[in-house]
Length: 316
Image (cartoon, rainbow, N blue to C red; front, side, top):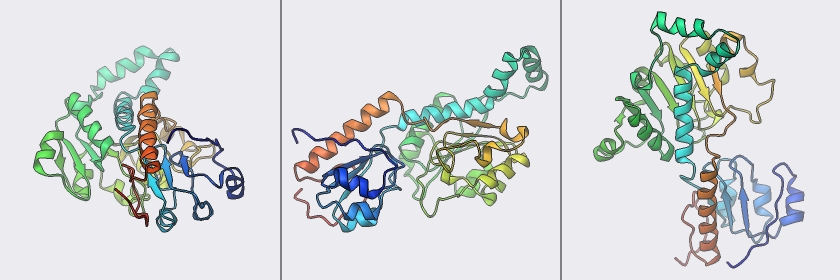
């Protein structure tokens, strides 16, 4: 593959427009949240592969890709350290209540804010907390490493298939069934893809099993959390705070339900605009992965990062 003709298209065009401008394309490179539909895949006769620019690929119709012999690939691991850093930022940011304390200084109440913490001896260090990681892929593993550096002694994890003892020792983590993890963790952090099984898994029953006054972090996907249940958990003080890099229904607009609560609720939400994985280094790593996969396909070989089961005769 010596050269490529690139067609740069917006993410909200109708299928007909994609087909008009690039219907004969061999490859689609798509951001991690844009839909690639059955209708589009089946009308692109030359299509060899669809490559996500990120880790997620749930917006791509895998069934259609399988049936049309089209590889679907993702950039697995490209942003693992970046998202792990964002996860730690949200954890520490909640424990130090950075938004409220920033406002206190800006509004001339620095000494009152400091005095309250001294009087109550209420500020926690990350090492004071047990942390539960739900899902234990690349990002959670990097997060566990950072937690160890902060001196966190009890790092729990839950995944469908438990690690072997050597791996648990390597990462410094302890396995817990989900209900036990929720009950034993001061901070719970989500590291899962969106599937039928995980969609809105953080629901009323989920929060009811968490410790009173605990913390939730979500740097994975907003669809993992039931917003109404989250609001109730904050109202009841089951959750002290939630740190969210992603919300359901992005792009997030002013009418989002989490943004239209009383100040007592909204001040206990620490939000960031889904930036955990979009560092410069992540982009360099991701596009190096994409380049490698597309070159392999152009050579008639199987790419390294296939996430589907295309009906293809592979020479290697």
